[in-house]
Figure 1 (cartoon, rainbow, N blue to C red):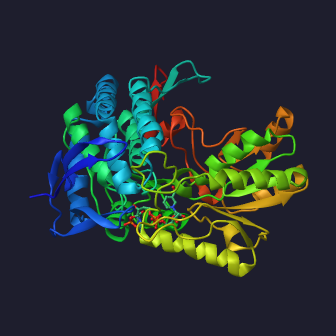
Figure 2: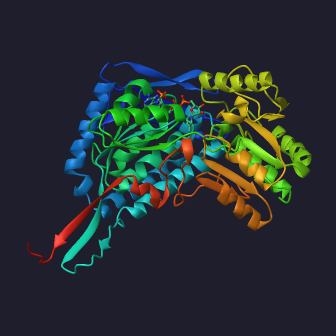
Length: 501
Ligand code: NDP
């Protein structure tokens, strides 16, 4: 009997209940893993066990791939029209809308993000992403290509790849699930997906919605389990033709190695960042402070695009720092199901220790803590919003992704100085520029080596706008038309209309 979660939410911001199976989702059914073992799922706000999920193995990945291949060969892939795929995705979006609050509550319970953010960002954007790709599913076209010889016709078809593997992290569990499955399904692929072992619950709840929406069994398969077993099995599987991963640069490298060593499957990676947020002296300082606070502390700093290096022009440095500190002090840290709370706990003991380790390293290296730096309470993985000043470029807190509510505020002199400092990183995911001079802002945006630049804002996302990294922040793009290209193979067909040999 697969494991099961029944939970009553009786909280200040949400009252309701949820009930769903937490086994492996293979061929449209929830099943136990081949060994019968389970993984405990911890509530990061209380450190208590919420439930357990099945622990998948290599054998379970094999079963999921076989189901995905069967579905691809019979009821999906080239056997399902774009319109049929579009209709199913649209039904899924409607099912998500009908269960939006429940999905938000599960995400809060499992991940620790606040209910307000879970519903206004994670769930709302997820629904829009599914709708966006429902719109694409019946509008995929190739090209007809001109040749000098009029007796030759050539055209291209964008065919699905087949069975694709997807591995997602714990910081935006539902959103990453949807960013991955929606373009893959729109283009006709079948899926074997591994959620993070820390946050598999919304993915499993989505599996029941996928069934209820009418997707044929085997089109989406979810194998919960550890990275070193299930993740390795997916990335090295000989029958999986493409793998998409979001997570650390360290693991991204392992995925690429596994792909190279097995069947040279296509790889897309959405990895870490150390994003610069640049505040020029002519910026609207009040707005810059608000956006910088959101840019750094959103999702407790557990965002790949977190604006964790804040560069401020020398003449406004002191006044920015004063206002930014005041704003950060107003962030209410606490139970993510409480009203008025802005920041919940970090995801796990591991991440808590890791972030506190970075805070220690900053202090030991000689940077100054301007705000925070400590734990909040003694239950749950809560960390104070933390601001460092007087940091040097070679310090770990300036170079490495901390993935917590910790940022450094750094002074710069002029455009040339800040472009050099901002680009002095192995990462290239996102950046922001604040200035009232649009020429200056655009010129700076074009010189930054990052996949996204926000001008006078931060963390804007839209299903139609691509997101992904330069340099070691990744390969490929999520969302938009761009993501579709990663899920199709282009076939060129040459027709001879009368040439003879
Ligand atoms: P990881 O990159 O280790 O985990 C992401 C996903 O990859 C999880 O599902 C994980 O499974 C899986 N995984 C781990 N090892 C392998 C492997 N060898 N082959 C295939 N899959 C694997 O992130 P962590 O949770 O360890 O976080 C560490 C750091 O990574 C963070 O502090 C942050 O800096 C960065 N990170 C970046 C994210 C982003 O959005 N760019 C998201 C999450 C983390 P399992 O859960 O079992 O480990």
